[in-house]
Image (cartoon, rainbow, N blue to C red; front, side):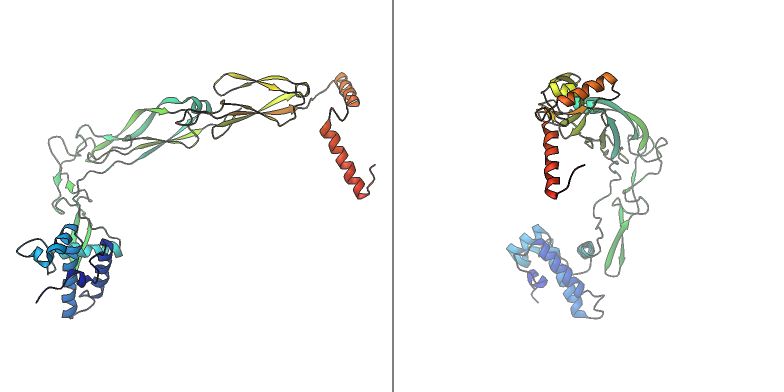
Length: 378
């Protein structure tokens, strides 16, 4: 009897994608599986048919050959789908478990080498160090490759052996009816290798704990929370595996004078009432350790801000800097002497709307408001 077209067996078009083919196989395989249809010879035959079709169409090379030559491509001993329930079926039906139960096929061969873990190091720096950058050294306890066994985990003069239970795959299979289940090899814990004579220095792990000193370059302009990655400076891998990475997280300490907003710096500078009224110059420190002169115009009010261009923080990986903003806070005199009180009283008596426009304007608005309500002031 002539074989049925593989595409017809799976009820898909010849233009079907790999995903369409897999979905069709999964659906039909579950419907006509012999466990669901005990004693049904037609269902058993149908199950073999779709399994054979899927074995060919899921493989790009086999599918291309089938599209060109049909069933003849797999005659006379050429590779193709099998009609029985051999190893090919076990491999194909594993795809159902991957999609439905999330199980891994575990077809790869175990090497025994595992990548080392990534490490985290928290570093505190000052705002000044964030401005200028810093070359620092840190000491961290970490796992390094064992020198006695060069990371193999085996005693000098010996080598790890292929695990006899799993044959080096790291996983073992167990057949249950038509199902083929896989689990991690209990003998080698998935590594695919076993060690008869462990290294005395590392106990077979291939790594030991040591304290290391590392150089860290902190670029200028880093912000709070910046993460710096040092590749391959994490824990050493198990039994010669590649090392992990080291991540340094930066925290910038609060500054007593500056507050940072992105690349800009802000500061509050108190000035005397006289300087604010008559004008003058004040000196303010800058983050680079120098000083800048700020001209305070006559009649400056408390809260006014002055901008110093380019005196802020450098922008990371850019040739530019933010600005510095100086906010003036007019200080009210305290602990006045009798003479000072008399002078201030005389100044107030001589003051007019031109010298205190905001106060005069405010009082005028209050009077208009109360007059509108018909309220008399005491």
